[in-house]
Image 1 (tube, rainbow, N blue to C red):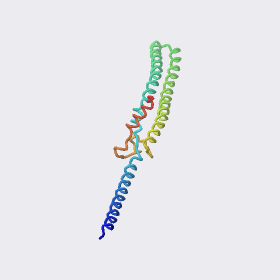
Image 2: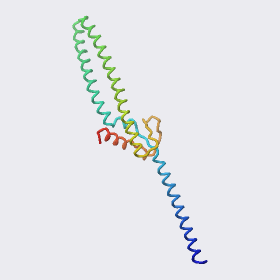
Image 3: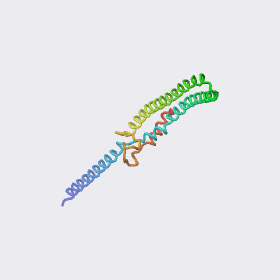
Image 4: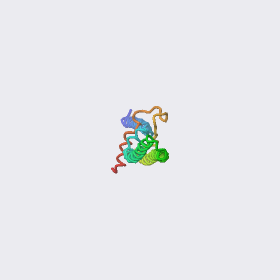
Length: 172
């Protein structure tokens, strides 16, 4: 066989080998990237660990504690009047106690709903930004009750999203 023909055949073999390597490499990269297309966060851990949840919770707890003290003080006064058999003052305080108790329940419901709504509004924004920056196609949320029954360890991005969200919330 002439040397030119040998070089030609050798060149074809090298080119074919390189093409096979490139195809295998591209297949591997495509497979590897597809694993990173989907991730999930644990909603409960994210919500509870988010600094905004803690800040708003503390602020609301102060208001609720003030309302509880007001109601408890009225109850103490009510008990004193009841022991003294002062029916007129007792009845007036009963009405006021019911009103204060209703106000306390209303505050608890409002703060719980308001806090949750504000925090999730902010977290959803941060999760979207984080997902886009990491080029995820889908970020699922789970609460440990059936949304995600099993997932590989690497696709739970709760800790990373929590760090990102707290940094954004703190202005970093």
